[in-house]
Length: 258
Image (tube, rainbow, N blue to C red; front, side, top):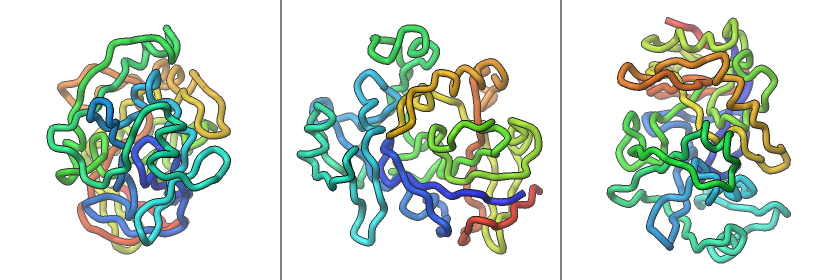
């Protein structure tokens, strides 16, 4: 298998960037999800998992810089907190430290599909990064991988992976990687820990990409699996992984399953 693309998202729920090479350690891919936007109205972390309130996050793009992060709007202009707040219609502040007790609200994706992104729907509540380093902005684990076969032509940006892998076999073959290790390039070793359940985010407009309900409906038809033993079957695309041995990774590196 071959690494065909590397993605990082410096700010949670914003559009990210592709890189050719990056360092990966227990905190994930260098520069990935190191920041988030704090909603000054209710003190919660802004997340497009609540599309009724936060789908406009996906009109913003974040770029990792030596000084931290640069956020640009749809026209490419750099934005500060005031400019971001004006575009989102809610007061926010860029943060790099997660508030104690912060949780994620995840709109029930099937209800979003049925009722539309402007409807009030039920949500579930989950802790941040239960399989990641303390204080992170990851939903669950520090790395997300998906194969080109599982993408089935859908732009990878919709599923927000870190690694896109070619040569993984049939669609959803990565379900069979759970519990196994991956050797990536000469140094990096990963342990795959769970399939990745999908929320409503892949269906939303991502910058120039229009809405695409099929991005959730397809895995709902084809790949309902239990991400963890205590969870019900859910639509999944890709897998989560933790870092066993840190290393540097580049596009074109080989991946071996162990």
